[in-house]
Length: 366
Figure 1 (cartoon, rainbow, N blue to C red):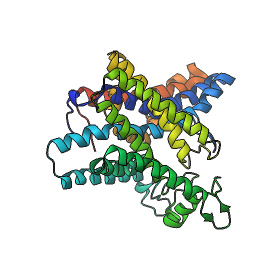
Figure 2 (figure 1 turned 45 degrees about the vertical axis):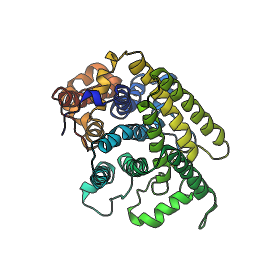
Figure 3 (figure 1 turned 135 degrees about the vertical axis):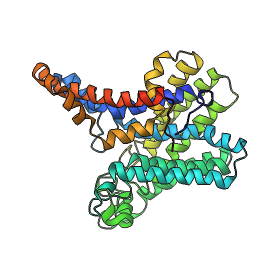
C-alpha cells in the first residue's frame, strides 16, 4: 500500500483505466439485466454489444481486455523512467518487474485458474486477463529499458508478423494449415501440447497469443511516450487521434485477409483494438488534459486508482449475492427489473469499498 503523488500521474490515463474497469464491474451485467427487464429489440442489441461474439468480428465489449493492456503499457514510460532517474539499479528494476509478473500471474490463477479449488483437475495454467497483462508488462518493460523507440517499433511489427505466420504456415495434425476456427488453429494446438490437461478448456488461446499481448502493451508504451514528450498537448491529442484512425483502418483492411478474432488475439485484432484504444485516449486526453475538464472523472478515478483491486474483488466475491441479502424485499415491487436492481446494488457495494480506499489515500499497487 502506498500513497501516490497526484503530480506524478496523468489524469486522463487514470480516468480511462476507471472507464475500462466500469465495463467489467458494471456495464456488462447492467445491459444484460436491462434487457431482462425491458426485453425489446433495442435492449437485446445493447446486451449483445456487451458480450463477446462467438468467434469472428468484434463487439464493444471486446475492447475491455486490450484497453487494460494498453493502459498498463501507457504507464510504463512514467514508472520506469522515474526509477531510472532515481538511479535505481537495473537489478532492482528487474526485481520489481518479475515480482509484478508473478503476483499478476498468481492473481490470475485465483480469479479464473481455479487455484483455490486445490484440485489439479480444474486448475488452468494460463486463462486470464491478469496473466496476459503480466506477459505484456514484463516483456514491454524489458524492451523499454533496453531499446530505443525505433527498435521497439520493429519488435512490435515483428510480434505481429511472427504470430500471423505461426497462425497461417504450420500444419495442425489432423486439421491442416492456416485454419482459424475454434479448436483448430495452431495457437490452440500449441496450448494443447504445452499445457496438456491444464489447458483452460475454452476457445481462447494464450501461449502464442502472448505475441499479441506484448504488441498490444507496446502500443500503449508508444502512447505513453507521446504523452510524456515535450510536444504541445494539442499536438499530442491530434497524434493520438491520427494513430488511432490509422491502426483501426489497418486492422479492418488487413482483416479481410487475416480475420479479426479476439479469442485468438490475431494481429489484425491487435491493430484494430489498439486503434480504438488510441482513439479513446485521444478523447480523454483532449477533454481532461487539454481542455482541463476533469470534475466529471472523479468516479472513474476512484475505480481506476485501485483497478486491480476492483478486478480481483469483482471476480472472487459474488457481490450480486451480497446485494440480494439486502435488497431481496424489493423483488415484489420491481418484477423483471429485480436483476437490474441487484446489479446496481452490487456495483454500489464495490464502489463504496473503492471510495473508502480512495478517501483514505490507500492505493494498492503491485
